[in-house]
Image 1 (cartoon, rainbow, N blue to C red):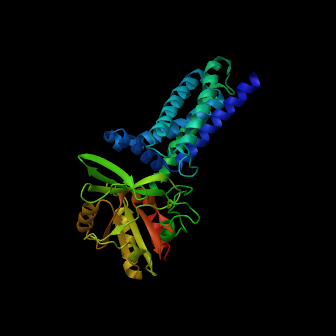
Image 2 (spheres, helix red, strand yellow):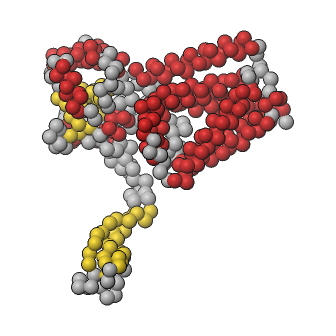
Image 3 (cartoon, rainbow, N blue to C red):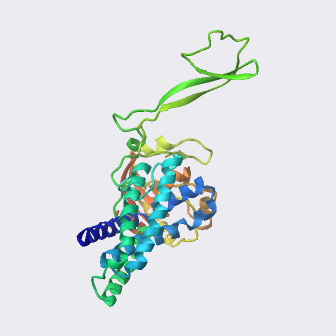
Length: 369
């Protein structure tokens, strides 16, 4: 029994550390996933706080995992893990039963799990952690109290430092469809061999004050234009396919609303594109961006901005006396493309040659000197 107990403790501890480290690679991703849940629950009032929630949850997963392995203060951490897995199981269970959330983000974008897979994982962890909770008095710390605290202080510092670094730069490992070397135009296409959704056209008519619904192959035997009045037609999903392109909603609009997506992505010249989700209070990148603007002008490299916060960006450029072409973009696409605000891309015919986060804009300048 003692061997089984230690094996379970090892498995639970490693899983939480692994889960936390993967999510620490992209804390904004977890933040956006939290916003997805809040939007479904009509609790968008918490959207502005999701990044803080994300950072704290990720750090706790790593810290708790290490504490479990060390056996330090195990009575406390066994209860904390139990409460956490109850919460996670509720979330993944809700995602499965409601069908409103397809992916729960348990392992970030690097290891995608469906809602069903995440729920099954949490059920297994629930059983394992419940067992540890029952046997919590049998666990003894591996090291002395001072050594364990020393390790946990290092882990706590490291878990927060990792996330702060990523937010200012970019994820250590880019698992998103906009990674360096990707072709955006190809990413907008459905994968080869994928199966599209199967749909059937449904018609709704009224007859003698009652609605009648049928498809093209099952028209009523007495159908005619005098007794049936057309209401509407729609496509009904029969079977969901897997023809989902990796890149969705990537549309670039001019200030007047014209679609310029293909014009920009098919341009054979190298060009810089700055993605700005919103103009927040953190403008520490402006000085470096000015250098990018000057360098691009000197080298005659086209430079533009794609943003979902168009008016504020235009006003900002005017105040800073910067002349840059600004386009409108979908906020969801920009969230995925720009994990740092802002993120600078070097594109050529839609291929991402390079990309830099907020604190790395100077590297784009040194790249050409």
